[in-house]
Length: 447
Image 1 (cartoon, rainbow, N blue to C red):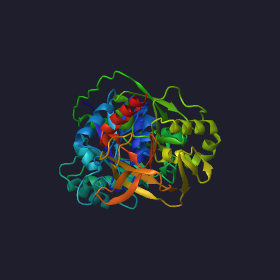
Image 2 (image 1 turned 60 degrees about the vertical axis):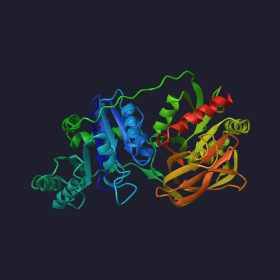
Image 3 (image 1 turned 180 degrees about the vertical axis):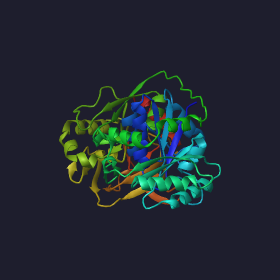
Image 4 (image 1 turned 120 degrees about the vertical axis):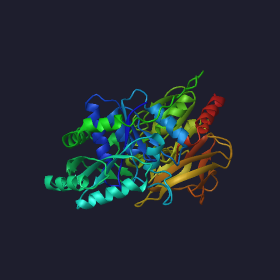
């Protein structure tokens, strides 16, 4: 059993990420072991969580996974921690539909029994702050909003008006702090969102911690979490007879992985062996397969291109039948070129970067044929988000049937070449844990 909080907001851009990172960093300074989480499919925020907390930040997504799977992920990830801190997604009640709570922070909070800390952008508000919060507090009587944080507060007079508004309105949660506007703590962004933790200077966490420590009472926040203990769930890990070495690309170009995918692979008997396509000229020895995750290969295309030895070796292993699973950035790396910079050439396709977003949203994948991830008709869920497009020849096999959440068919994707599978879709193995098991069995059979 572990205490915890879910940090949510009325809308995106209210300051959830800054508050979450500042709170995690401040607790870490106090010697508190924090288990970090992110609601929704995002990769970048969890990367910042992990950099501060020193442990993976798992995604909690009620469209990807059942309540049972979400609880198992949460429980497994809390081992050895003193407190769980989950960052919400979008607005508190926003999810995949306007009619219900599926995919929302509110649903995850209720599934896990986590009290909500609501951070509100208080710019140009005084008493209206209380009206807004009252609406959020009464919208879902089954949800516990345990405390309020006012963000982007302009002055001490502004803070006093906010406190008066909350204290004079019956039934509101307590206002636990007023965070001033500060340009120093703003996180830089680029085309897929915030700059990744790998590319952000290390002192930023200290600035965020100081910002939180100066304006919030950490003792009260910890007490708030301790008084609302989440559920208890025992997680069992099956015994594994054989460890299978799977190479996994990990560097500034390839850093987008769902930790649950990695946990399920390890649970199925995999030893994940990291390597860097940016810096290492040879693959690790004795690999039974390769996992190429997403990231920003387009920002490092020149350096990737110069590492001809590794590109050639990956292409050679693909021709020899080594199982390789690649998604989004990893898939782009396997193509012939990214904006005319030569890549691995496993797929005879040109990748073109675009000035505008090409795709964004949840995806359901149905396998059209047997593949390294499972037999035909296997269903698995994922997310797609990219600023590029690929010109793939028609003679390359497609083994995915893609659809939106509501079932609308989007087309055929998931490109196959021998035992290589590449796609723009980031799959979440927690939506169908048998995918990880099948990939491991496939790799074993080939040995």
